[in-house]
Amino acid sequence: MNNILNISAYKFVPLPDASDLRERLTARCKDLDLKGTILLAGEGINLFLAGPAQAVRAFVSMLAQDNRFADIVPKESWSEDVPFKKMLVKVKNEIIRMNHPTIQPAQGRAPALDAHTAKRWLDQGHDDAGRPVVTLDTRNDFEVDAGTFKGAIDWRLQKFSQFPDAVLAHKNELQDKTVISFCTGGIRCEKAAIFMREAGLPHVYQLEGGILKYFEETGGAHYEGGCFVFDERRAVGQDLEVLKPELKTST
Image (cartoon, rainbow, N blue to C red):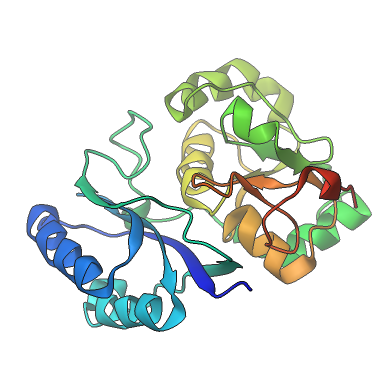
């Protein structure tokens, strides 16, 4: 029976008090007996948590009492067991490392594309202006190998900090196309889309909510395989259930 609620969420928002916040969130997670990882940095928060639904939602309610996090809506999935062994709350330089400190999503996002519009554009093969549409996977190579959009651009990245150089090397190939950048939950493609815009690519969108939100809202059309997740589940399918090898399908 799937009675463990797994959530993931992030937000780029200035957190000058990240160290103090770490202490408060650690104490609350311990009180609720939650497991997972919370990353804090001056640029924002990124979290993955699991536990009984009542406990997880109590944490989300507590988090929302801070106005900076009031609009966070976590992505949810269910599992039979807690897929984390411990609870970690860390303060880092970036919640997703790109090594480009000028990229500050809290100061202004690149345009985002909702799941249904992305599916419609992929159905028709072009955007509403008639421009060819391509999907760009911003994840690491081993994540891509678990599943990705059919025909997605894959630069075989080994870490996200390689992404900027890859963009500059392939910029001319993307110049006349509409690019949908995507990742697991949205955090990497948010930074990626900003970088591409600043590099001079005019028609770039980030997939709102990433692959997991796309699965939730569209059922995974145009996607092949599962989505790698950084916990003991390893990958989830297009129904957001734990992916079994025999269930890998294309749509």
